[in-house]
Image: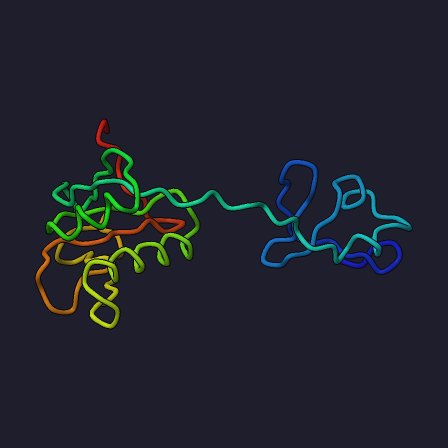
Length: 161
């Protein structure tokens, strides 16, 4: 719908002090988005602010939950995670972005199984259940176990839930 000075109405999501056009990186301040006017064109194509991602954390894990759930245990260091994986146990990389979690999970698994001997598997929704997480594992065993990682939509369960 055309507006003043070439502005148009679009679906927006209000996030803190800015309105973001759904599906794009365009943003406006709310008063400009709603009121339009001379400054609307100046703000129409501002990029959404970069929000720093939290660094991933590593936790001991149990993959024995119902419906394929991975249960997150105590937080551990990278060295502890490598030793735990080498012993055939599961770990889960949590709290970061999907890309950062995947990258760290791959690095840990390669530390255990060796570069080139690691494969990424999607969640085993049919075999394990709907709460399964994607993971890395060695192409040739041993060790047993998996290096799970959270995504933006798939999360490990807390041990107390």
